[in-house]
Amino acid sequence: QVQLVESGGGVVQPGVSLRLSCAASGFTFNNYAMHWVRQTPGKGLEWVAYIRHDGNKKDYADSVKGRFTISRDDSKNILYLQTNSLRIEDTAVYYCATDRAIYWGQGTLVTVSS
Amino acid sequence: ENVMTQTPLSLSVTPGQPASISCRSSLSLLYGDGKTYLYWFLQKPGQSPQLLISELSSRFSGVPSRFSGSGSGTDFTLKISRVEAEDAGVYYCMQGLQLPYTFGQGTKLEIK
Image (cartoon, rainbow over all chains, first blue to last red):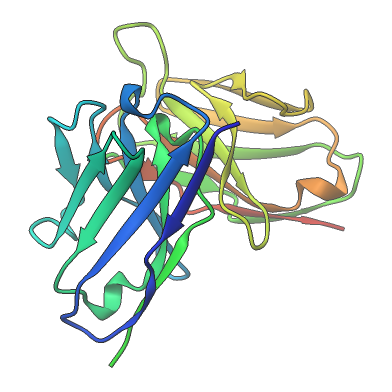
């Protein structure tokens, strides 16, 4: 069965970086586009980033453009989100999801606090 | 950006009674391939969102038949024919037609 397992979250100070990972199994990873979506109590669900199945197209929410980078390692079936220059408003649970958000991981919590 | 607006934001339903949630998109979600890229999710407490309905009206694998999706263009409805206790949680609509994907605010369903 499809399984997505996120990791890499934590409590960090503003300006710091984190790399989030999403280990995928149960499907042919390199056939699928992938997304990162985050959830905050105040703003609900917010789409963050997209990467095409071949890695050649990426897109980002305006709120993270220039600070976050999505990537994938198809040899390891892992999706990444490099988050730089973290801000307090980036505090959220970060989910990875398959295209069209059909399958979701359990999420990893990122807390940015001074 | 395509804005998704859900109503109501909360509802309380007695088991066995029907429930209905509306979702409106600021842009048509009907694509040239004839599909409407509207999705419904349920997020139970402490869990990640789970897909209920894809492409307007297709129930995802394992989703009970009491859930149904309908609508067209910009106006959509999720209906639960007879609510059960396990249906409690927050329901979200999402447009998957164009990036950025956007979500409704969520509708909290409480079981009386």
